[in-house]
Length: 400
Image (tube, rainbow, N blue to C red):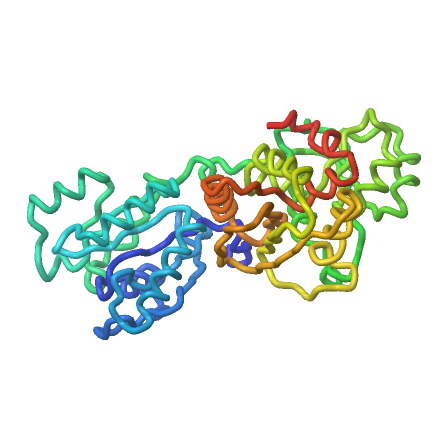
C-alpha cells in the first residue's frame, strides 16, 4: 500500500477557516506530526500532503490546505492555492467549530457542488463548546454526514471519520474501472508495442505500460510485449491473431502500417484518456484542430516534470505533426504540474496521458475548459488525428 502511486490514491481535501483545527485533524488521523500546529493565524502556507493507508478504505492522500479566510499579507495567494486543490479532490472534509457555518463555509460548499465533490462536515472542539441546535440544523440543510469530535482528545476520531468517508466515497473508487477489462475476454492475446526511448526509466517500463500489463493479466489474458522493430516478427509468429494491439503513441504510424485493419489498434495514451478523463470530450476537442489559424495559442499540459529529450513528444513531436497537418506554425505554451493556469486566449488545450495525476484533476480541467468554451484533447488523440487514423484508434471504444 505504501508503494501505491498518488495517481491511484483517493485524494481527501481538508478545508476550513484558519485555526479551526485542520492541521491538528491531519496529525490525529495519521498519528504523526505531519502539519505544524500553532495559534498563529496562517501557520499552514503551502498544501501539506500525506499519503497513508486508511483501513478499510485503502491507500489515500490527505491534502491539508490553508484557511481561505487567511487575513495575513500572503492570504490571497494562500486562498488561490487552497482553491486550486479542489481540482484534484475526490472527497472533501470541511472542518468547522461551534460557531457553525459562516460565509466562508457557504462559499467552499458552493465550490464542492460546482466540482461535484462529495463532502462531510466535522464539528471540531466539541470538548470546548457545544454547537447550538439552530446552527446544527443549518448544516443539515447542506449535508447529513456530520461528525462531532475533538482533534486533540477524541480517541475514536479515526474510526468516526473513516465511517463518514465510506458513506460518501465515489462509486468509481468502490468499483474502480478497468483499463481494458470491458473490452477483452479471458484467454485473449493483447500485443503491446513499447518503444524504449530516452524518457523511459532505466531498467523499467513507463507507468501506463506497467498498469496496462497488470490489467491484462488481472483479466486472465495473454500479454505480449515487443518493441516496434520486432512488431512484424511478433505478428508473424502468432498462431492466433491478437484481440487488440496497444502502442505507444510515438509508434502509431508504424503500428498502423504493419497491423492488418481487421485487428483493432489503440494507444496507451488513449487508454488513459478514457481511464483518467472523458474520451468523448477529448475526441470532440481534437476536431478543433481544423479550425486553428497561424500563430494561434495552444496550451500543452503535462502532469509531471521530466527531462525533455531532443525528440520530446510535447515540445517536438506534437508541434511537428500539427505543422505537417495544418501547413503553418502555432504558438505553443507549456505548463507542468498541478497548477491549472488561466486558459483565456487559448484556442486548444492538449493534455498528457495523466498517468501521474488522479482522474478528478483531469475531469476538473475538462469542466473548466468546457465552461470557457475552449476545446481540450489528449496527446494520443492528437497524434492519431494528425496521422489520419483517429477513427481506427478509438473504434474499439465505439466513440464512448
